[in-house]
Image (tube, one colour):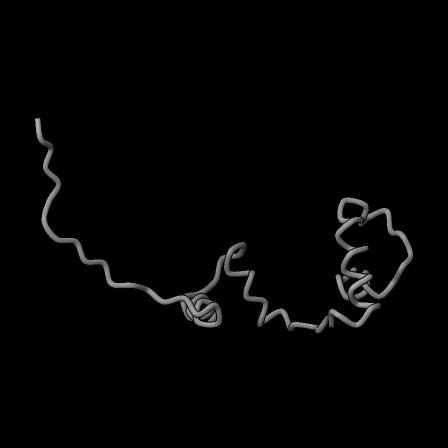
Length: 83
């Protein structure tokens, strides 16, 4: 069951009791018009980058959608211990 379906349906579902308070909050916001829920295709689910393995090209695509970039590593000098 999708979050969009849960937010639009006020019927209690035993499978969702662990998110009961959250879904009621979201449902109230949807019903009041202050929140809109839109479908996001699975290929554009950016959060998957944190939970699933991907090919390099897919990883780079999702990373770019997050506006993350690789920073060049530059170390200078050394570490000295004063005794």
